[in-house]
Image 1 (tube, rainbow, N blue to C red):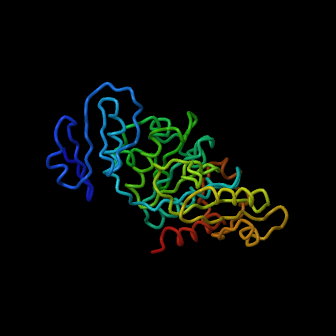
Image 2: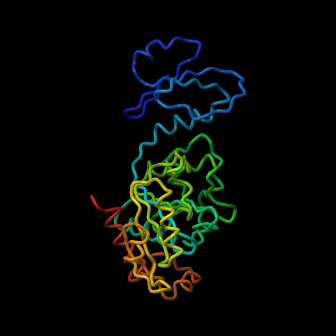
Image 3: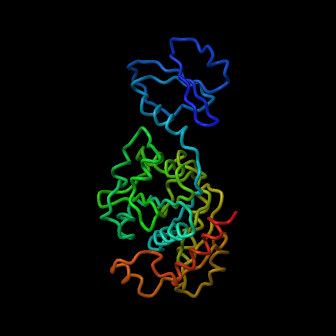
Length: 312
């Protein structure tokens, strides 16, 4: 059997047969045998591994691997994480996704803060039909990317994958990386609302989930105070990603200047923002991030979108 996906060809060869033309083709070979072994299935399907998989024991990881061959990365991925709780990272992530859609960018927003109670509450779409994380997170065989994207609830044309009252995404859920990769293959931009530990992404010490797609930029949202400066510095040191920038919420309780704050963190300052007057009351009335086109949040994400999304 030859599975073809663009430049990738994979041969599935019965383990009782010789490689034959597979070996001569120079493409990856996965040898398949049927048995009742008891070993733990592992991700050993790298192109150079000469892997042997045992069915039915290894059926799910094999399906995930073959499904992944069809998921060519397409989207730019921007992560948004709070230096510590209450900084407004979810609001910024949602507003950034909405601004990108206004500019004509096909955008998805994924809620990866499992303790937040569900991003759909912030957006006011908790009654909209469509899958949430609890419906997907145990899936082990991958997702048809177009089917997943079309099934998701919409918020101002942004496709949203959120937690809800039943629970959110967790780092030990096997379906989470597959679902995110599906979104990346079907959109131009994917905005990830991360937890404040950014535990989903590989760390310099080897933590995180290496199966997650690359995060091209990480925005750390921080209040302008010393505790947030320490937390932002720690987060930037731990997460291994190509670009980390600060978004600072002013004013600080001690009058700390945003430029001084960024210098203390050792991070470039991407933008400053301010808690909008009446924002909490507006949210209770059902208003959602970005509704106030003249507000500070809307102006901030317009500038960020120009730099991170629309720039050539």
